[in-house]
Image (cartoon, rainbow, N blue to C red; front, side):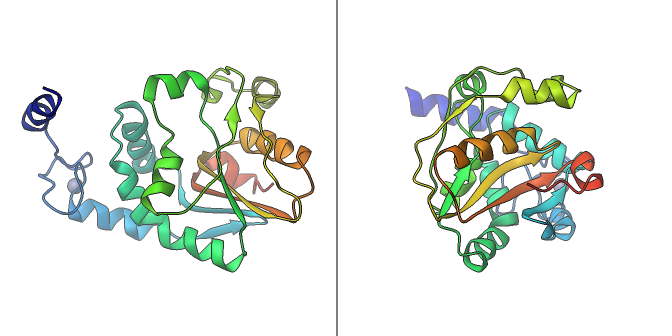
Length: 216
Ligand SMILES: [Zn+2]
């Protein structure tokens, strides 16, 4: 019965390009060849201190990530994986990264959505990673405009017993805005021992992060 449901879904739900509504007949579902090319031209590896990112969080990336998160369309991890994978692998090699740690999503969102999109991308790219537990329910960060409130919201929300002593760690998030979540995660990692180095990678950086030259 389950497979029949899936087939019916495939039949009735359109897989047109989310940007231009053309039929997406290429490699990706919901994205045509032309629009993939447009995204490809926007990407570049940028770096401020220990922070690396690929895209500006503009309206196209916002649309992609929104689609990805809210509509549970797991296979968009393939698109992001293909767009960012070579850079991510280069950084891991060049920086001699020992442990990759995706930023965990909130308990509530994990329940709603059932998956962490960054973990999905890493699995698609066959990059091994270590998960960290999120132990506190938090409010969505975008609802909190004030940096102090964001800090308070995310405080003590992770738990880790990761072996970090002398290790180079790469923390991965989808979008970095003010950096509060990543900073809290780094604090927890540092409470587990003394890492050699902590680096941060995100798919996209918001204007706030870019303008303030956020690093960690
Ligand atoms: Zn298109």
